[in-house]
Amino acid sequence: MEGVCAAVSRDISEGVRAGGETESAAAYVPERPTLSGLQEAAAGCRGCHLWERGTQTVFGEGSPDAEVMLVGEQPGDQEDLAGKPFVGPAGRLLDRALEEAGIDRRQAYVTNVVKHFKWEPRGKRRIHQKPSWSEIAACRPWLDAELDVVEPEVVVCLGATAAQALIGRDFRVSRRRGELVESPLARYVLATVHPSSILRQRDDALREAEFATFVEDLRVVPPLLNGQSP
Image 1 (cartoon, rainbow, N blue to C red):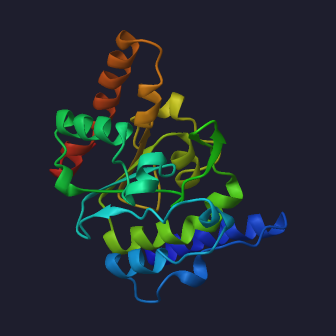
Image 2 (cartoon, rainbow, N blue to C red; image 1 turned 120 degrees about the vertical axis):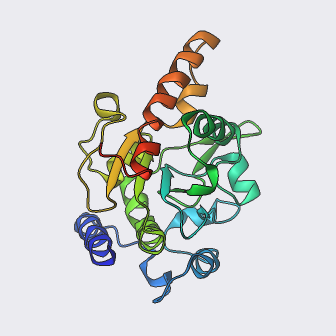
């Protein structure tokens, strides 16, 4: 998988360079990566400008033997402060959904496409800003390295940013959520919504309905891990 991930990363980077952007984390990635080595190296990453505003790098977390990798967009405010992915309200919702879907949290590795929190001030609050394509491309070498080390059986993209970064810029989660798609990144790849989108629903009834659909999307995963054909 290493060659495939490197090729995908090069394709993205070349497209960004054509537009005049040259930022990349590639120079910070160790030649013979391990998860602990990657996390240590990423702590000092200056591959793009987002490190200037983030409190710290928020790297992925989980076992190097994890069968499932869940990939979100970027760390949020609480993740930025804690230095761990998916520890805020969206992370707690994800944990609940994994349990209901029958996915052992210990089988999962969680990470984000972008490793620093991008935000803008609004009063005393730090408000999430969506990362740009050039910022996603600059951070992509870290995600490629995580994929190469973990070699998950299943990759689950959480939200449009992760899905478009990993599957393709034309991919639409609203049309193809929960559907297995062909990809060189893992044996099985699918996308669903980001749990934060569930929290943004306007009332409890909508939140519960969206959560139930989210769990149904994730229920695709356990049979795949048990060797059942999709």
